[in-house]
Amino acid sequence: MRLRTNGVSWREIDGETVILDLSSSTYLKTNAAGSTIMRLLAEERTTAELADGLVEEYGIPADQAKVDTETFIAMLRERNLLDTADS
Image (cartoon, rainbow, N blue to C red):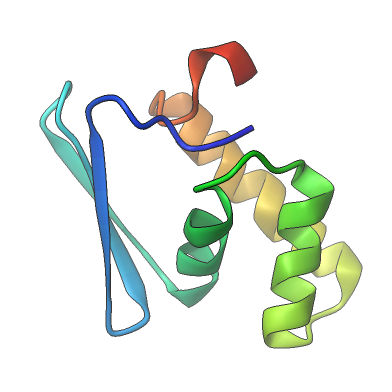
């Protein structure tokens, strides 16, 4: 999966990320962990790769990273922010 590039703009500011969905005129703000996942989603990644990124970046347990990643990915899917081929 990867972040949708058409109609989505995002910027990382002071460890947080602001995501703007131009097609729905909505924006979201993430915390530092969400920012890490967003950076990783600039390229094709699996859920396991995203969770591994959180473990590496923050030293959290793998099971917590998996839950956090799945929750964040579900939010992105709900808002149609992932490539449709991957949804």
